[in-house]
Image (cartoon, rainbow, N blue to C red):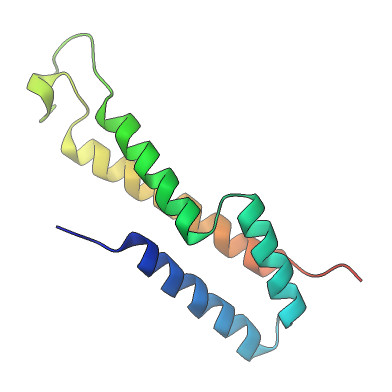
Length: 110
């Protein structure tokens, strides 16, 4: 199954920015400051996509010393598919939550 992670993250970011501007809760300068902060904190869509790839490679290479009955991977020596999915969902949610927090709280200093 193929998924355009970066494209979806870009769409989410664009929608959030659009809503903040439309509601008047953030100015264009505030958004500019937020984007700079997002880049610095590795929270832009391309950066998140890269960190997801890195994390997935890491968790897929995790190996237990002894086989576990509950593991569905690597003859019981690796994280199960379900565990990997749950971990990656949490990882992505943390990135999206951090992005949202930066957008909500960033403002251009006077």
